[in-house]
Image: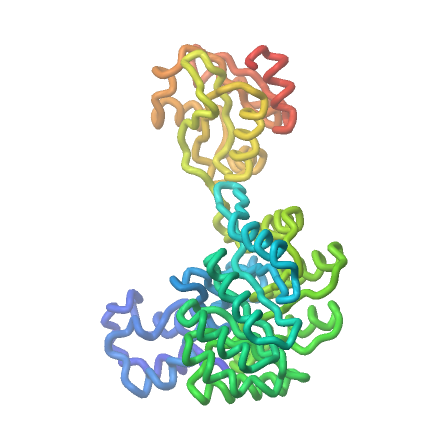
Amino acid sequence: MALTGLQIQKLLPKTNCKECGSNTCLAFAMKLAAKKAELSLCPYASDEAKQVLGAASEPPVKGLAFGSQGKLALGEETVLYRHEKKFVNQTALAININDTDDEAAVTKTLENIRDYVLERVGEILTIDMVSVSQKQKEVEPFVSLVKKAHAITGKPIVIRCQNCKAMEQSAEALSGTKSVLVCQAKNNCQSLCEVAKKHSHSLVVSADTMDGLSKKTAEFKEQKFNDLLISLPSDTLTERFQMQSIARTAALRDSVKPLGYPHFYAIEGDDLIENTVDAITEITKYGGICVLPTFDPAQLSALMTLRQNIYTDPQKPIQVEPKIYPVGEPKESSPVFVTTNFSLTYFIVSGEIENSGTSAWLVVPECEGMSVLTAWAAGKFNGASIASFIKKETSLESEVTTREIIIPGYVAQISGELEEELTGWKVSVGPQEAGDLESFVKAKGYA
């Protein structure tokens, strides 16, 4: 069971030195109990405290790093639901290739994986990993494919095979890349532990039951190897949903350490819709690494958009810097639009203005990352605040000759106030939906 703040305080030096950043040892103990601080912050912690509290202060879900630079992170989760705080490290998406696939097709897929980029609300989204699966018995072709996959993409590799020799040679070839070994033959897990440890890879552990899985992870940890992922026993989507919920709840609420590891799941099958549903379940229900059977840009776009929405901080909306943004190549006489600094709103509006074929200035005041209607309702987006921003925070009035500013149609009611506050300017009401900006621009003769 997890230690309470009072239990943890008894193991601390009780000096209230404040060097840990907390005012008292009790306050620091409460942070440790809530997994919001690490014992290393206390410079006077005893050896006993380090031994007892070191494990207690670890995140409920083991943190892992992948790739040569260790930039891809998984685990370290502390909540069951994102509204409680936030999810930390998003589900990693991998694309699978087989050693029986056509060589030219494999090369093309790997190049597509390497080059795939999706830009959404200011974030650059890419594919995280490549999965290489063994479908034939020969060792050398499989090892060569593993090397090729890493050479072309530069991404960590999920190595999936039953042949121990092929696994060992592949692990050695990718030594130091912090890739993943998937123990497809359950009885080979023990022998691969040393291979993974030697070459700095993580190991996926599976078993027929949850108890069997817990026993295996506990044994590996006793052997000083803890870079593990778990593949939960399930045969259907419903079972997997249940198992992943049970495992995460056990790790977070009941401190069941043997289940506190990122989850691994490889999707099989050719039905794109079913595969997408499977992937959605992984992303929304605690998936660690999710292997997709094929490269499909449309599917990836939908999954990455979903993943991005789920793994943003619900208490801290994605926002852009408040300032005047040029859209296209605006001149002094170009039209002036205004919107909020919520990233999605900004990128949609600026994109629609650009698509209309005109150049313009886009005024983006500080709205704490809220959308138009939300910011207006909260008093963050009104005539006074917009006028104050333009006058005090920008040099817009000296940079443009136009004196017309276009506001979103949803807040037409602020037009009068804005005209009073922004002396000499005419306020025009634009469309309610950004998708209508193109027709609005053409009707006004800006394009």
